[in-house]
Image 1 (tube, rainbow, N blue to C red):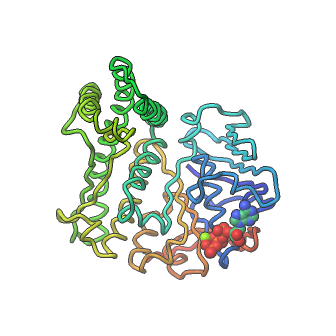
Image 2 (image 1 turned 120 degrees about the vertical axis):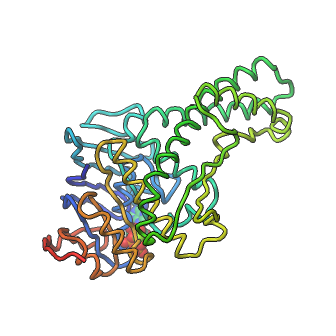
Length: 374
Ligand SMILES: Nc1ncnc2c1ncn2[C@@H]1O[C@H](COP(=O)(O)OP(=O)(O)OP(=O)(O)O)[C@@H](O)[C@H]1O
Ligand SMILES: [Mg+2]
């Protein structure tokens, strides 16, 4: 998949911008605070309808303006489509080929994206919520039915927590709530488990390659259920678990078990990377995870996602930069920000376009094609 072109209207510090992209590598070069990340963010918002930098989408609208519009032409395997996001004080709208879309689960997944920025190092070190978000973002892009189950689960969880606050609890009513909550939870658990199983298979050789075969990595899916197989099993197990924890949940007015408490752990040679991994090992783990995500998504969707790399050149050492760029190797359309032209970027990449970013304006400074490869 690739983004042919992008149009921005009053988005962050871009007043009006139209840009045609290189099908492989696009380099955004500019000083600080000129609009490099905003560009990456625009593509991300177009894919997910929300940003990774802010909770309130209204912050994306240019100061003093009423709305923002992001439009792009996306070339997919079978067809070319136009996607648009319109953000205004009243709310947000998404369009496919100028037709407004009502269902988020049908919109998400049209433009598939893997983003890699310094914040992603938190995937290892940060709170469990960050890893759950990673699961949700990946799975939602690949599976509309996961996205739907997640939205339903969150809605029902809220209802259950509200109900737990009631003075009088009706056992039968609670059981009905638990049953429907467990139905959604089962879909989430099952798909998360399958995802981690699949990802391990892809991740292990990639990580092996990045460490010259020195390190063996494994991701473990940590959840409240024991071993499980079918969705039916999971639903029953989760319902039992809810029952078992009822008294505690009631005291806290909060459901204490379930997929909203899930976590992931990364192990190298059976040691948890979060606790025992060196800085370098943590970085390599995130890098191999990102590369594995790309392959996983490609295998699910039948085409490669686009790759957004914000500020990663400053975060990775030369060897990892080369590994990353070699991996991309023209198969993934890539958007990369940098404050200075990096020799490696131009040596490893065979063909690319450089754009300068200056005060909310993009300028194409040249396309290059050459044969040098490291
Ligand atoms: N809603 C908005 N309206 C107008 N300008 C905004 C808005 N939100 C942020 N900005 C400004 O946009 C500019 C560009 O920000 P951006 O994060 O894209 O910069 P950058 O080029 O990635 O910088 P750095 O190299 O420091 O990461 C900043 O000066 C920021 O203050
Ligand atoms: Mg930036």
